[in-house]
Picture 1 (cartoon, helix red, strand yellow):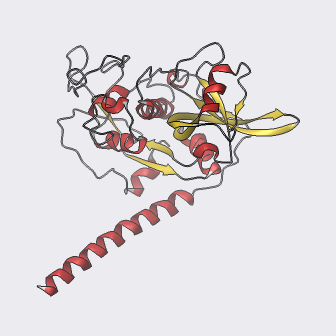
Picture 2 (cartoon, helix red, strand yellow):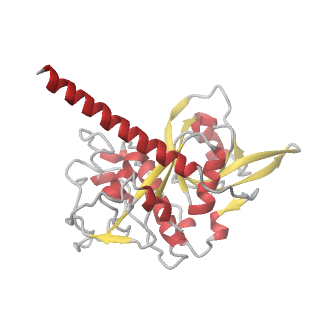
Picture 3 (cartoon, helix red, strand yellow):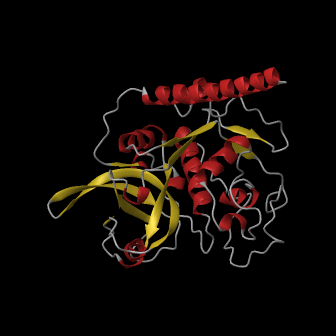
Length: 310
């Protein structure tokens, strides 16, 4: 009996060690890529002007589903960028808000509209895939109840969905240059940050559209996920100030068109702490959700990851 227990413990340690080595190998592989001379200013909208998704501002209304919006936006951008503008597919955030059971608390009536994580959303994408926005469209969810928020396996018009499936995703931790390289080589990324009341002041009252910089002393309001599509510098009081070029999914007014600048390089409000990127094979994968899920392309397949978006 003791011998059997020891064998089980040894096997468990071996599996954990193997997973750890996979992680290390992948991290080293990704960080060992060639050096890139990054420009001082970069805007994906200029580089890929044919991609309509990069100009699109989605509005989440009273739904706390920023995480789903940002992930669907990033994947849509990367589909267009990878196809050199030939594929303008816009993917559905509604699929994540209603069907990603491990993204949110199942006891919550509003499901994904009361919060979720972009990590789980990317995992859902590489596991199940996402249909198009035209298949499952978003509408303001102020009157959602438990009866109409159920995950549906049909499009809004009753037709069968076609799912776009990813091959991998990764997270970039507190590394300004790696985030810039990721955007430059592959496209937009998602980013989480902590929202304080001064950001509301910036968003609704700032007519100059300057760079948001955290002001200590303001009340913490919660977490938010947005999309980053580039970077640059502005001259403020005679000094160059670096910023991220971001896209929000909040309501807009005269002071903001949905795009804004966030101070870069200091991890303010943890803006550089949880940055995620998703990958898809050069040939976009389609399948019906009833199809058998094959995991050979998922997460630890370094050979596959290296070919994505090239």
